[in-house]
Each structure stands twice: as structure tokens, then as C-alpha cells.
Length: 178
Picture (cartoon, rainbow, N blue to C red):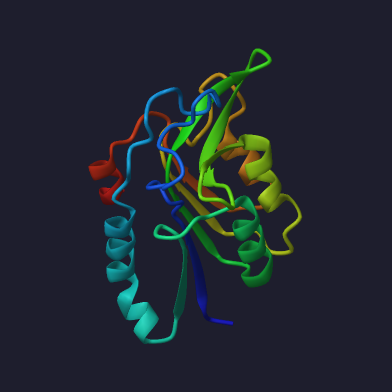
């Protein structure tokens, strides 16, 4: 099969239910900034437009105008086996039991925010028949903690060929260029 399957995951950062995570501790007590996800998606689609027109690529987008749950991502990964997965969102390093791990911001079914721990995020890829060839994590600190084994290494160990991730904070305008 010559069709390149691309999954873009862009959780809704304009949640109508809440604008901060309260005491959840994932991102902190501050408000969650909205991202220009639509603009980034349009840039990606523009770059891949020729492949789509020629029937060589299929781009599926989860979000950003709809909620994106862990279950939505799991279903999409299992049913469509994308070659490329591109996450556009928020992530943060959280200290848990003297260990630093990456947490990703997704949505709950009711549209509120949900912090997904690194281990739950990794579980999405653990039992796939075909792991993505490329995973792009376009969010702050998405490569994992500098003092831990790193999320990138853990994903590579599951069979993904390449991971692009950030070791520091990334601003929205930089993310679009990334």
C-alpha cells in the first residue's frame, strides 16, 4: 500500500467547561493558553496538499474544534494504523514519587481538560500491530525529563523509527514553524 496515513492530534484548548486545571497539578494553577492549532494544521495540510490530491496521503485530524480523549486516540491508532502521528498541544514535566514524567493535555468526554501521564500515553502505542514510523510531539517538554530515560527513548523502544520532541518550552509561533 502506497498511502501515507497521517494522524494529527490537536486537543481542544478552548474547553468551555473550565479554563484551568485547578488542583490537578499537571500544567499548574495558571490558565491553559489557547493554541493556534488550526493555523498549524492548515500549514501541515498546505505542505501535504499535493500528496493528498494525488491520492498518496490521507490526513485525519482529531480536534481542535472537538474534544479529543485518550479513547479517541486509541481507536484511531488501532483502526487506521497511521504512519505519522503529530501531536499539537500542551505537555509538562511533573514530579511523581521522586521521578519526573511528561504529562499531556487532552480532553475528558465532557470537554474539560485531562492530564494524561506518560505511562498512559505510552500505552496507546504498546499493543499496536503497526506502530507509527514517525511521532511528532509538538509541545513543551515533550521529550521527557532531562534526568529520566526520556519519553523519546521509551517510544523508540516500542518500534517507532523516529520521534521529534521538544526538550524545553515552545511558543506557539515557534511550534507552527516546527
